[in-house]
Each structure stands twice: as C-alpha cells, then as structure tokens.
Image (cartoon, rainbow, N blue to C red; front, side, top):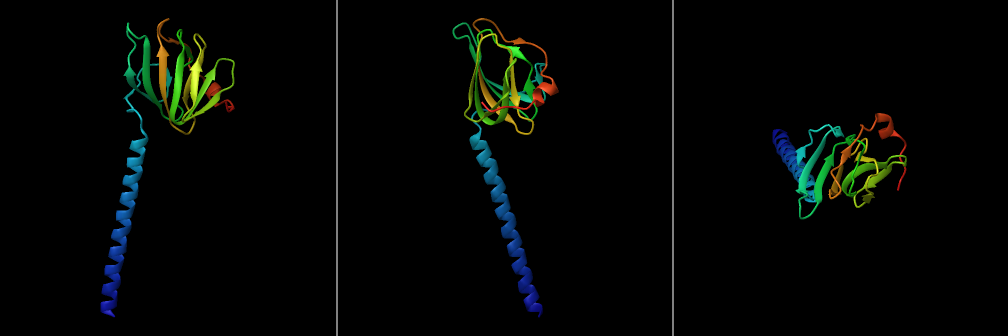
Length: 167
C-alpha cells in the first residue's frame, strides 16, 4: 500500500510539472506572437493636452524642408482619443491593430479595424482614437506643407459614446 502511495505521489508531481511547463510555453508563445504582430514600437507616452486618456507616439519620420510629411505610429489605450482638430495639408490614417473610431464634424462616427485607411481632407475637423474597450494602433501620415495641425476642443464623453456606424 505504501509503495502504491509513493508511485501515485511521483505520478502527480510529474503531471503537475508537465502542466506548469505547458502553461509557461503557452504564455511565452502568446507573448512572442503578440510581439511579432507589432509593426512599429509603441513609443513614448503623449503628455500634451491634445489627447484624452493614455496614448503613445513613436515618430517614424519628422517633416522637414525637403519633405513636409510626418509619419508617426500612435497607440491608443481603450477610451483614449484626440481632441477635435484639423490638418491644413490633410492627413492619412492607416489602422494597423485593434479597434478604433474616426469622426468628421457633422458626420457619423466610423469604426476602424486593422487594414482600414482613412483620408482626412485638408481643414476638416475630425477626431480619432480607440474604442471603448479595445486598444487601437494607427500610422498617421500628416502633410504639414500648409501648416501644422490646429487643435480644437476636447471630444466630449457624449460625442465619444454616440452610437457608431460602420463605414
């Protein structure tokens, strides 16, 4: 009987070790897959007052005298968003991960998903950011030839949570 308990104990220790090892491999695999899907680094936390919530920016290209186009990777945590703003030279947004929103003044809000592209016309007031419960990553391509972005008022919680429509 003692020998049977001893064998059962060793068996349970082996099963436990195997299960823990499998869980660790699964967690490691998930982390590695998540890192593989990241196209550009998350960047630094944005600390200006043009955003509500937590957002991060990794500048990829700064506009200069030879090419007045800036390109930045922006990561929005759930609920984070820009203020209303406009771009005198227009802007293009490339959704690369998560779920986000885009809205032009007076138009219905659009839901953005990985692979969606938005062309923001020059001087059109708009905002963009993450959905309520999902993060959102975008590459923002901004033409500054006609001037820098003009930041306006914050997007109210009521505006942010209005019923959205698909594109």
